[in-house]
Length: 294
Image 1 (spheres, rainbow, N blue to C red):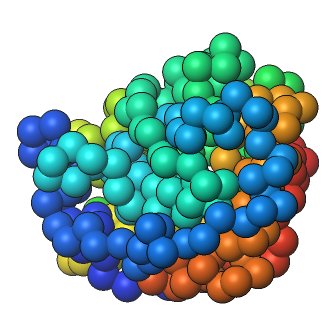
Image 2 (cartoon, helix red, strand yellow):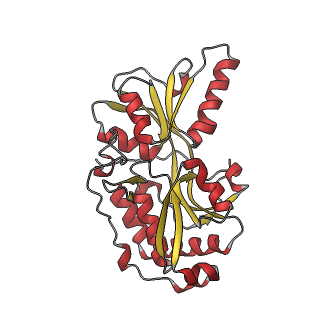
């Protein structure tokens, strides 16, 4: 199913320009105060005993993917994905402790049990399910953006330079597949230009280093809204798939996070967070595990 997101102007994405160690300087006020969320007894009961006793939920994020996860002016992780993860921690009666890490390193650290949750806009797919579980919290897809007035067409991308965040599904799956089709047809290859963070990806298109970028639809929509007059959406939303919080495979932590998310859905907090971010059309009706099918 194709999901179209209508995103308001997000101050959260305000500094896609590159500034120091942060990627925003805008208002980062949360839509929900996690300190007011009461623990859910059923979710707490599912926690591994050692985590419950620690009182802390150690979570990893890349914090380079506004408006989902990014850093505020002080370097603190913020964004609607961070807010939702911290609401889950509150439902579990735990204090969130964040580790900001390269995207590619988060899932391995969950496997090593150095992290308990990965909250970094992970697309839930079959390959990733081999090593971790995903508690699904949003239906999203991929969307391209290009300079206003360009003739870029994602379905005719041979010969283009396309920017992308390293390690994302667009980098590892989508663009290599498109490039393979170009090469097989005897056409010019796609130049895939990866960057560590989404602000650098967006900047590459704005400054003419790349013809377009591909990213998750909420991220692309926010960038286009913020840079109105410079960027526009091109092509249709495609490859709709669920986002998931990553957890240790087959663990009690997976079940606890699922129960906490379901509690947030049931009491309306979940939808409040998504509505404030402008992404309610992608909301799920129930917390599922490993819903990705591709």
